[in-house]
Length: 394
Image (cartoon, rainbow, N blue to C red; front, side, top):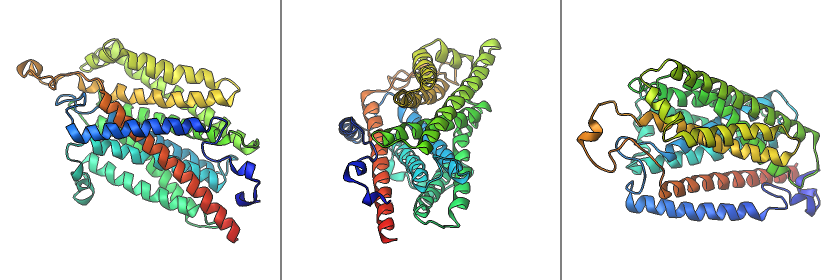
């Protein structure tokens, strides 16, 4: 039976439909209004209202950029592999479309954050029109755009029942999805002058976090889509798998993170001041409270329960926790100067090795989240509309 022939009461259950269906709309309106104010401030006063400066040029928006890249890569890998292997709960075209749409809804706002972080937004496309592929930034930019093209084509092919190109393109998409979270780690590892970032374990950490974020993102949106719908064994199987994958990826991330920082503390090196700043200095609440407690330990406890609502809360907290984890990599690597005495030689509020996000930065972050929610909602609704019309024509 097609969606178009279902009773009206059942068709109401779509993306974000639940007894609390008005709450997501209220939240989205708050995010988009606050985000619009942030964007206006960004273009009205430039970067002067931001907390970063000359010594710490990367802040919250770049952290959210890496977060979006992780969600995009992880959700596509899980959705595509589940579809290729015909895992119950992942084997239907509509289920694959959810993963693809979530991936695109995460990666596009990430680019919005980068664009607003640039001093000259109008020069953004020069990295595509005049690339130098020896640059890690140029390589990543082209790789992300190729991935989005592949993901968009895969989304279109899901409406064709016997496409011979879908699975090969999904394999290519999986390759790119595994590559670019790892490349995010390489992006930092390649900075040889920064001992805190110059660690081969960052690629593994970024890849593990991408899997955790992708699984948590899919878990969260599929529980929201599930609200009010009739129980389905395949859907239950998908939720169980997503919960397990998220928990395992969190544990893997924590294991490698422990290996990284325990060695630094046991045998201090050039990057020990950065690690001490993160663990015991000015950034300790971000690491211990937001990342470790709120974003890892509490979700693991919630995933041990039998209630889907608690799984959704845990998945949401995973997103907050790994946003904090991105900042735990980004900011401590910028707080120590490489030229002794430089901060004392030039005195200015924007010439300090410290960083705290400002209200304008948070508002622009709201804008990025609101754009992602809008893309996901429109993508899911569009997919259902196209699928319904194709069924009617068949």
